[in-house]
Length: 290
Image (tube, rainbow, N blue to C red; front, side, top):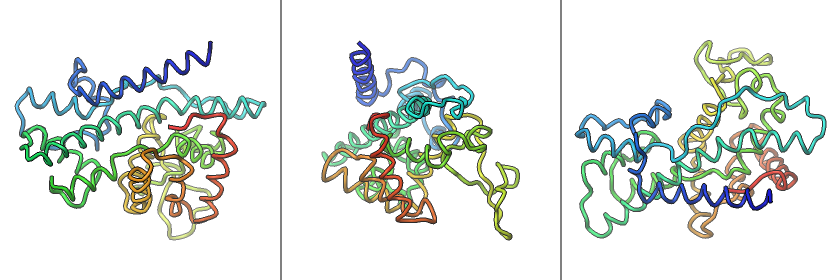
């Protein structure tokens, strides 16, 4: 019964994502839904559109799934059974990872649709151009032209990060949710910030360094920032190139294969990648690949 319910739920999520991608204007109130977007996800060209097209643009950009319940970080260390602790840890993070990936798939499907429209010599509308240029801004595309090169660059950034990889990095970087950065600041990924007071000052920060360990308002913001980091920051150009090649050759991107793109995530380089891969293999039974 539990297996049937899980399979049915997964099928339902997939249907919602496909429906939202095919019909991005179905959401009843895109203006209200846009309040769930982070500041860097808000469209930058919206003022050039009339009110109807503004709503269409917002509907394109919003999440196909509403925000899961935001709760405090559970006391994972208090769960003595290792299997139960791992399961609880993954279940806490999975809805937020799934939500980010569902939006990326929704955006990607629309980009591909507009790319095909251009290849058929059809002119894009003002609202469609506004959508593309808003994504150029959000995903930090350096070549801001809505031509083949610009759209291909955009597609290399607007793609999923497999949940197995996200979950494993979260477990590694947060000590399975037991670090003070995770429990007190929802930082599960060891992310840094560089403005005084933006987070925690590391106890062993070398002299002359000014970074802090970022503090987030909730788990959704932490996961969102992680996705933004890997999909936009120049350090992960190689990761995105690897992902694009896997997508081209095999269709599905897995955490095991994409892990090789994390060589610059840690100063440990290849050793870090090996550890992440080993952790994915060891914990695959506790999580669903996506």
